[in-house]
Length: 153
Image (tube, rainbow, N blue to C red):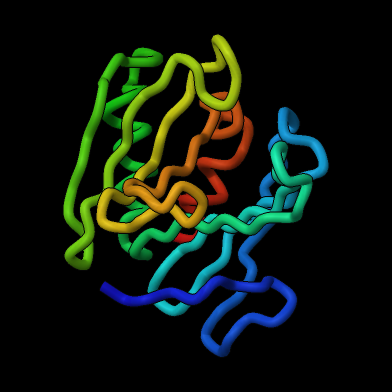
């Protein structure tokens, strides 16, 4: 498993680039970016800790090829041709890492349906426990994020 350093979007290493910013309206004053780091996609966040009031960095790392699987699984196994289907969880191995998707009824806030896109093979940088998890509300995917992810995959 490739070790990925803590990234700084202003000073990225070679073979890395910011793909786009992601706006989470429920998390004001936070910065979220999707970064390509070599053959990985990194969901990078900068936020202020509620407890210490210090700025913190979080990043969730996925093998690049898992992004195409994520978008296809959302469309085919969760949404389907007749609207939203209820699939609980899917997982698969990519580059030796256990990647998965779980549906959620309370994603980012109460009664906001969405998905947990997770990497069970990597430890979360904040909690120091696995998995690394990227919570994505369904409406954000339907309002354009899914199309952006499909374009990069």
